[in-house]
Image 1 (cartoon, rainbow, N blue to C red):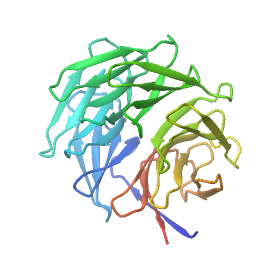
Image 2 (spheres, rainbow, N blue to C red):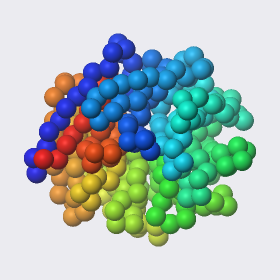
Image 3 (cartoon, rainbow, N blue to C red):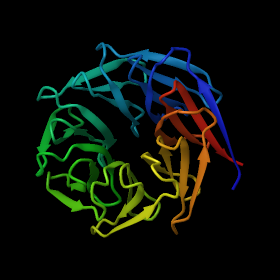
Image 4 (cartoon, rainbow, N blue to C red):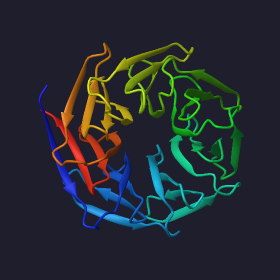
Length: 295
């Protein structure tokens, strides 16, 4: 497979792009935790910005919903933000202080689900605007990324307790311990095979868990790749960022790996998403947005 990687440099120096999502309008939206902004980039590389009202909010993960709203976590401000289609930013304060919201996803019925790393909780914003929180069983779970699963549940990584968590719409929580010790699961996504896939940042592996809880692991060829985020690509393969080895990785359903070096050294790729143009887009901490197209 031949690919081409392009990079778009942002005008704001050291803006800290982190999370990235595809908007309903056919653009890409991304968080800039150092510049305290939400960025929007077209497939042609044209960039606009939206300021976050709360200073030093620490914007991290970001999603676009089926309604067209963009939601993001404000890790330092203890808030969940929403960017409307009209460009207005609305913020929701979490009930408990210093909860450090991080991962975020849209649930099956349109509710917004998110993780609280310090709070050790899973949060939920109902369509009415009401906020609900669910305490995790392990006091040191450190929940990170989160995704709606192929079943009726929400799945999330527990970075410190080395588990994959599952929570139902009724708040029932189940945990699954990973075979690799101290694996450090982070990014998680729903795969093309009705399973949930995730990365192990310390274990240097890609993991797979079925809705029934069966776990498989696949070792990444490059040592200390430090995989961070993962998505399903347009080719039914899993694509993921490797910020330790400065690469974009690809793994097929049969466990075959290919890795592609990012042109800029020490790019620190984090968030990754399938773009509206069927290219793989990713955020680089080095102040760039990357695009990998399959030729």
